[in-house]
Each structure stands twice: as structure tokens, then as C-alpha cells.
Length: 100
Image (cartoon, rainbow, N blue to C red; front, side, top):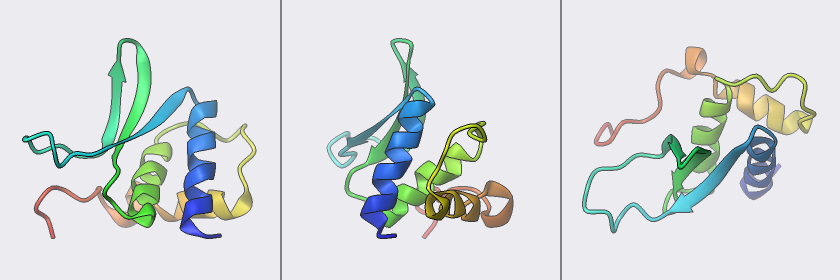
């Protein structure tokens, strides 16, 4: 599957788990910000830096989704494989600012 297709499927899965994926530009914030989960006014969001590559966005979302229970939700096999491939226990923690 192309990264764009995986991204759409990850967004759909997130919506089924009551999490909204929001792409935002972090360059204009003036402070160091990372992609991640947050709750705003009682709603669950996973905010992603829109300037990241689609593949990197997918990795970040998949890594977060591994912390949730999605076993009873149908997921396209290629997307489920992608999520499993990005488990914390296999890959380590997500990229930290300045870690490159």
C-alpha cells in the first residue's frame, strides 16, 4: 500500500477509536513541539506536524495506536501489519527533537 493510503486507513481507525487526527504546522509556534496525543476540551486528538513526510506521520500514528485496544475493529491486513511493525517494544521510542 502507498503511504497515502495507509495514512487514510490510520485516520479511519483513529476515528473509530474516538481520536481525531489533526495536521498542524509546528514551524510557526515559536516553541519546540512534537507530534502526539492530547485532550482538548474533552475531545481526543493526535496532532501531527503537517510538514513531516506521510511515512513519518504513519509511523507516529501507528506507534501510538499500539497502545490502544483495536482488536475488535476490522483493519486492512496491510495496515495492521504496518501498525504491528511500529510497536514500541520492537523499535524503541518515537523520535525526540534534535535526536537526528
